[in-house]
Image (cartoon, rainbow, N blue to C red; front, side, top):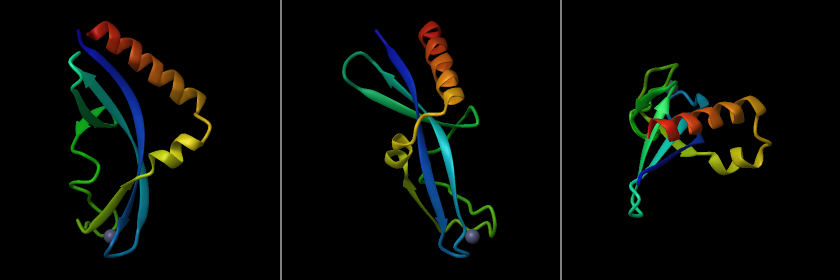
Length: 99
Ligand SMILES: [Zn+2]
């Protein structure tokens, strides 16, 4: 029996070269194998990507000297966007059918 669900994580980045800051919300797909193990895949714009804290590139100066940290706790305190919730539910339902 496999289980899969999606969540969202907000990440904040700061370039240590030019002090640009930006943030990003990534789709996180969790896969359970039914034995208590869990795998996680990050998706950016629907495409699997590397973990948010690696391969960060400053959009302004192209530096890789970027600091990243999760802002998910802060994001969870905000009222969830209705549209985002619907989309997440659709993803979840699709996932159930897909598996
Ligand atoms: Zn920069």
